[in-house]
Image (spheres, helix red, strand yellow):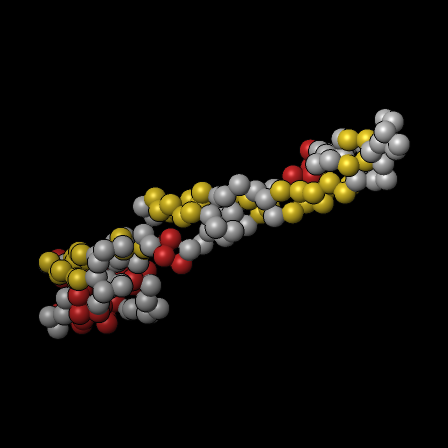
Length: 160
């Protein structure tokens, strides 16, 4: 009974190890038992990713992760900002296992990929047409109007 329990534990531990390490292995109870009876350790299959150091003890192991990585097998990284996911000049802020983008004026979204439509508020007056631009807008005024918002009536012969 004791030998059967040890074999079952070895199979379960190796199966779990394969899931965490991301390995695609089919393990049967005989192979797992043979693996450990042959004197192999968990670190023999190198479960630690991204250059992590494996320390084997008994029927378990621990990964010492290199800087920038974490997780049971060092399979997760803190270096989200290294690839600069923030667009349009946004600033990437790393927060452990995730990141946020601090967007520049005129943009929003997870990666600052969306442009704020400044024309949505209808800033142009007197029938002017609003043209959304990068971080701003321009009002195209109709005949007889001028100004940033088409707010000024053009005078003719000095009369308003």
